[in-house]
Length: 523
Image (cartoon, rainbow, N blue to C red; front, side, top):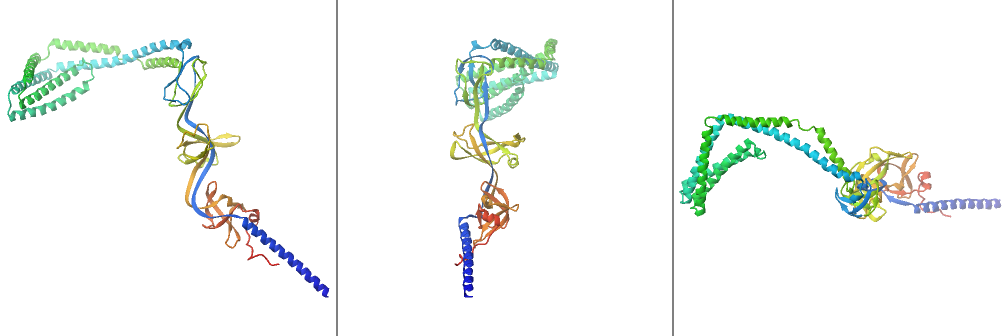
């Protein structure tokens, strides 16, 4: 009996020892698991969502320039790195080495230009002939209007008499001091004539560029000259009133009086001529001038057909284009990035000569998948890094997104073009760039690291380490994401929760587990 009791006690001790060892090993394993976990607290911060791709730098504009004819290079005017302006001559061929067609183009250009000039001259003749008809008709109309002529002649006599009177007063006053009343009257006269002179100038301006033989222009010019003379006389008269003149001023006053008297005599003769109306000879003369002008108009009124002018212009352009084959010019302003020729080189049509790049703007082209392209818009900010430039970040902006994709081996990509905003001498066309397009930026977002997110039973979850070392599985709904973090828009997470990064299979497989009891089991 005693033997069975001893055996039972031994068996109980063995079973207790095994159970205790298992509990101790489980405690040790869980303790080791907890000690090896990486955790991070849930925080609020700024999330920058980006789309990454690789692109290649290119210049804003580039051109490969080749020769269009054969010959021998005579001059090369640029070197690699030279900046050139639009139209700058880069190189030229020896005239003696050019094909006959290019050499003869010079003569063709001269004759074609002369023919074009002749055609264009006929248009000018047409305009002048039309104006001559109008001027002759106006002159004849004015002549036939005898009342107007008489009025104008009477006005000219009155103006000439006034000019004589002013000249006499001026002469009188340069030899003696006038009283204040006379000075005031002279000043008023100067003001009135200044207004009249301004009006005469305004009337003459529309006819100033007309031909010299334009009768209306001649009449208005005569009126302007007459008013100018009266104004000058009035100013001199006023100056004379204010002071006694010297010998030169007196001599000038006497000469002005003589001129004014001569003008008065001429005005009176003209009035006598027109007071009874125009003479038959005057009318016949103007009618003859009108007929001549009308005949000239009939001769040139149809002008040159526009198609003839266009054909002549095309001939000039063709001759010039042939001549231009003897040289290469810059098609736009830029930097010479390739020079293939030297003086003395023999070239043929199609021989590469230069490459020019417009480096005023540097662009980066990258391919974006159809999955991401709808999240990219013109104007979005971009950050870039280059393998060739260490420890430096550049910035840019999306300026173009292709509307049509390109399929390569079953994958559809769209080209997105970026402009660098802060390029420097380290960046060159052809370099490869790692590009991140900033598609969204969120402030004060609840953020979790992407490495903490797992998919369990078709839902996204994270595992939260509780204060008692237990682990709880929490389902989350995510919003925008970046390379490292995602925005939490739904779920039972709070700021400060400690989530497990890269949770091991022991946790993800069982979903969660309770922490170990207060300490390891006893023996």
